[in-house]
Amino acid sequence: MKAILYKKSKPNSILEYTESDKPVPKENEILVQIHASSINAADYRLLRMGFPPKSKIFGADIAGVVESVGSKVKNFKPGDKVLGDLADSGFGGFAEFVAVQESFLVHKPENLSFEEAAALPLAGVTALQAIRDKGNVQRKDSILIDGGGGGVGTFAIQIAKVLGSHITVICSERNIEQSKELGADTVIDYNKEDFTNTETRYDLILAVNGNHSLGEYKSSLKENGRFVLIGGKFWQIIKALFLVKLLSFGSKKMHVLMAKVNPKDLKIIARLAQSGKIKPIIERVYPLEQTWEAMQYVAQGHAKGKVVIKVK
Image (cartoon, rainbow, N blue to C red):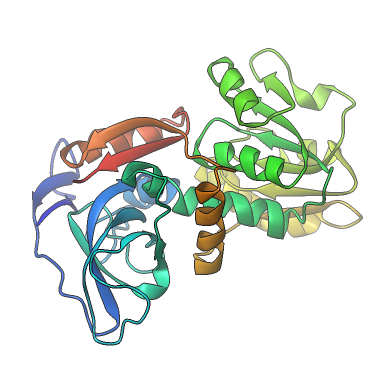
């Protein structure tokens, strides 16, 4: 099969479009012919750190068609259209085929293309867990989303709207109209206004790509408010892991989200997409052989929504 393999020795690109062995599914696994995958921060951060998956193939999000199933697989059959999150099962999405346990897959909504379905898993579940679990959002809560233009941010806006929140989004000028269309009630252009200089306070702040200090975020919370760090630069996340407990004394709580692969949550995201309550925002689609270029573009941090790899 064709795949994108990690090759550290390559001078100009450490990801190579080449031939690789087609996986053989075990008795509890499903062989999926991948039609599309998408790029996440988990991919390019592991790439930068030099920690490739065991298979040497990155790619957590997949959408495709079941080619064959092992003897112990119960809920899927050949021909089923599926999507999945492989972050806890060795990655492998930047390839024509992958073998994966059925617990990591759900059925693809019929109203979504394979490219749209591949944009859902990791970013959608991350946004859901941040808002519902760490954020403990309540109806009519005021939510500030710092970084609403990327994959997680666009899903966070939509999920917060479904849950009945009043949403303020911080983004660049190029993402203002998109944020409004997705459900933002107020949009702040970070090049023109600093939200920390206002008197507005929020029940929940989600920092997706924020550049403010934890102290500034905490000062912008209401009493009993919650802050959730979802993304940002690697050093920001590491620093926050050491400080959030210290800063959580009192009524304002600070959290760092380490999203977990959860098939139940993936089903929720798929149902929301099936019903039209959320939709994936895709800025660019690259062919499999241009995955290296796609990874470099996403790593710059300015993608609008998701960047998808079209495999088939």
